[in-house]
Image 1 (cartoon, rainbow, N blue to C red):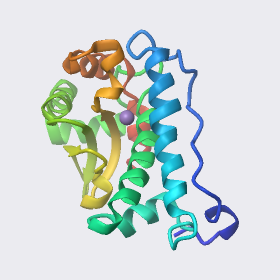
Image 2: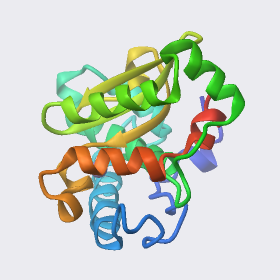
Image 3: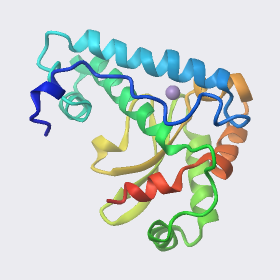
Image 4: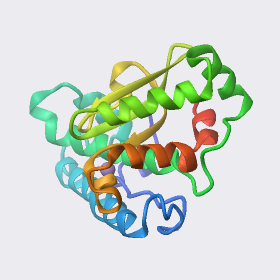
Length: 206
Ligand code: MN
């Protein structure tokens, strides 16, 4: 819980991208990032601030808003925008210009325990990402002490399932359509091979 009112009373802020908008090209173009970060992600943050203004949610952190609104039909709009704001900030950090490669040792050990090999882990992530029907997300998450791959629809995230997210891949069409059109599997494969940020996932092991 964030008790610092000076910080928590401020509207939610669009976090800076952790790299230049061209840094993920050619796998994800600057054009895609321009719309995805500059329009979609910004839109969720702006909508959330409009919905939260003057309500009990105005002084809460993003995580607190998500926890307070999850599963409540009359709070769906604020939940969707808050969760999408969180998911996108997490997605940008799940990618890195020189990603892919091998996970740090501590994460590699957990991957071996849960999936056997890194390839098997990537295969499971790719399967989750490509079989998510419609818009959503594929995640590597911690379930207790064990790694698990999960997929969520629309704005949902493992945060409300009692899981600790380690990394995510956005599989909404806006994440890949300008670069890959209908070829979601090509986008997912390229992300897993060259952009996925295993260091970030390892940091999230805590
Ligand atoms: Mn997105």
